[in-house]
Length: 243
Image 1: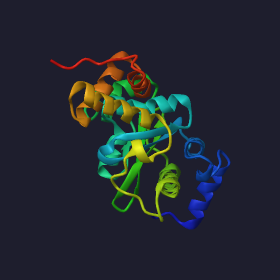
Image 2: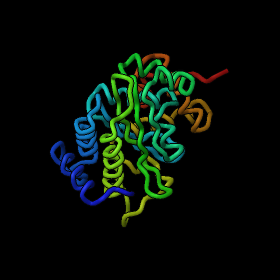
Image 3: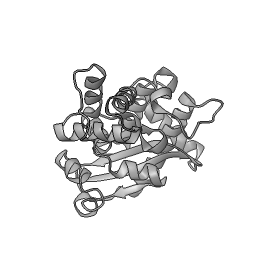
Image 4: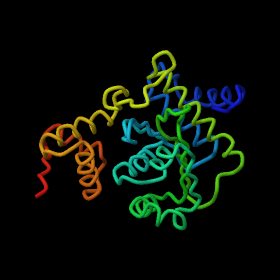
């Protein structure tokens, strides 16, 4: 947490122009933060993914519908800059996916580029040892972020983290093993974890294998993870046991 009070105040002001504060609804507030980030940096889009233990996704919001689909892509595929930024706790800056991403993320990279993304910059939301998620910034053309954007993107990430702590924390603290399915606000994360639990029972597998089955089905059918989860919960979709 290294931003100055003036920097934090400026970013909060930009966010307030796009949405209400965290107390007015965390989904709306996060979406407003993403829109403000995309406008200020500037970028083609921005997204925030909130995660719990083991990097499992609980909630994703973005500046626009297209960016939200890209934000979810790396969770459906199980790899990408956002996941690496969360795992390492450090920014992952990929200025040219065609050169830097093909070997590192062989599944995510072609899918992201097909969606019109050529560069991704992922900034972890963290305080000390607590990691809560990642702010992703997307560009349609290869190239690094400007010096000005590199100055302000971490401030947006810091404001996002503090807003989430305000929403989910008790007395300013946050459990590092936060369970998104239980503790985060209503969003597709709840559905994903519900479906994951149902699959554990139906398929007789552990939580990791159940989530992998969800991701695999979403990827092979070209559908959103949340839509597949909803079909499983409503029993419109039944996945068979592996032999």
